[in-house]
Length: 416
Image 1: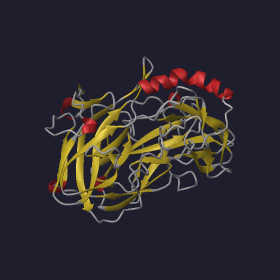
Image 2: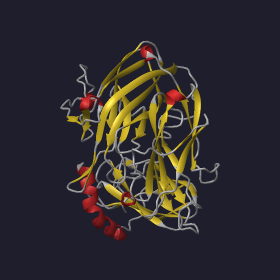
Image 3: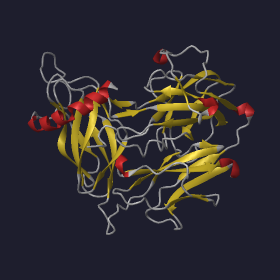
Image 4: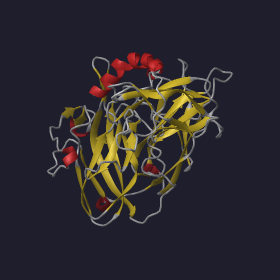
């Protein structure tokens, strides 16, 4: 939280000071003993893996380095498709700071990857306004992830680039089962003051659909698919029985040996009449985290669902990483699809070996600015179901980090 506060308070100073950084780009520290050169930050990290920039427009993008730079430092940046995207000001980090900036320009519509010190960021360059004043950009299904396994009622989240105060076009969710579904009446479309990337929420009852592959597609209401339709997302409908399903309340006190990474056990329990049992696990920050015990009788693929709500802040909703047994990196992840309580799949199925495991739905992108914004996560219930054997093939090629994060915007630079 302090890191986010430092980012906002220093942004004007850093942005202005970048003009004075003229040192040649640094690619690596010298290998010969006794040679001197400014140190290179060891690790560059972006707040998301994907964001957008308008064709013909520039955008400042923030990034973090693992350790503050001892001197003003310019890093090497590369673009894999210069016809789509161009760097117009090199990535720079000022002395003593751990936040840096790079300015890019969208050259033409398409997708390109910006890489700084080995860290990639995918950018979608979106078209200029059309004749009707709207950006003709395809809506994007941001959850569930391509390859997820679903059961019961589940949420479908859609991002649509729609600047200005005009109402969002009517959208429908088309299912390969033949159903057409309107946006949920209980969850409002995100307002224009939260930015031009508008969020639309749908709900599907998987219990009314035969088990097997199910393709999701977003189109303009009443229209056949056209270039403005979303890319399709394929999930699999399942019917896990009691023996294959483990469920529990997030606020329950589980008697487990917490992994070293999640030793902090000073949990906060909140109350809400809309939550199951009237209580929920309150992630006002990334720690403490919930550790949910699961016993696996035999190796297999397991899908997690959560019932969650959260607050939008800093340009993004909460993102939940699924961490297994306190590992350093998540096995899969998902972005919340709306602020109110909703049930969502956490990424795609993960492989678990036989035995006891602790699964942690970790609040990955906490954000706080005093008296301005505060992104929080609230967890109500968890479900983990065995959905296939350990050697089961992927449904549609989805992987653990693909699909669920595709619509996430850069939470630190979204307001710039």
